[in-house]
Length: 337
Image: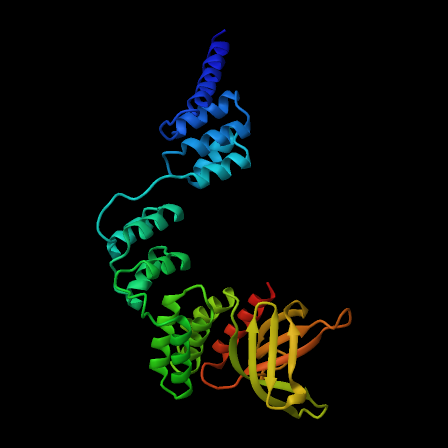
């Protein structure tokens, strides 16, 4: 009897919500929605219509979505809930770096974080140091873009475009002005963190001119993850004759998702390989069989059902050769994924 009375009460509450939807009322709370879902007196379409008309007074989160689904919400209702979130940040001054870091470290959802940034704007000088502090706190590329576009320090009418900054970095690189190239590419990266070209250029500068391989590896990986292309300078062991003579050529490897290209100084040795054809890429070196062997990157490439053939590459420079080859092998495996 008690269960029946509770059910009737919940059903009456759900119907009351439907009747209230005919006139302007306050947004729905979490508890109201949970109770209406558990009562089951409304169809999914009816409840979705009520949510559209009245809105909700809370922030949607992944945990709340799971809670609503457990109570009986279908995907249609969940989509409406995400669409109707009506929270806005309280009025106040533009957000400082410390305030943004506090929001990030407290686990603020991406939806609410974007509303803070767009609604209040940002009072933050866009230096690389500040950008790194925010990224360490958890700021994604999308959040960094929002911070840039809603920053009161930035004069949007005359702000250098990504293409302009990248072009300046490329020109400085060609002229041998490596610090200028890195600074311009850093500015481009900060102005649009979703694009890959600046990451690739910074990685190249750190690999071949600043000799910071860990930084180069990180930037190269970021470029590939965003659909970009990165470059390595290599020697290719083209053929080992029966009498032990090694025939080599030099060139550049270009890596991007799904594609491996080798441009040689000997055009007949050029390669263009689809990443899925690469069976294996790993670092090799001295062994019990060949203790004098140099380190290098060994690739096995499929020939369409036949026995895979072997391709060997070595870093073109001698300094930190093995470390550079390790990065190359790792990134070849990344483009295969």
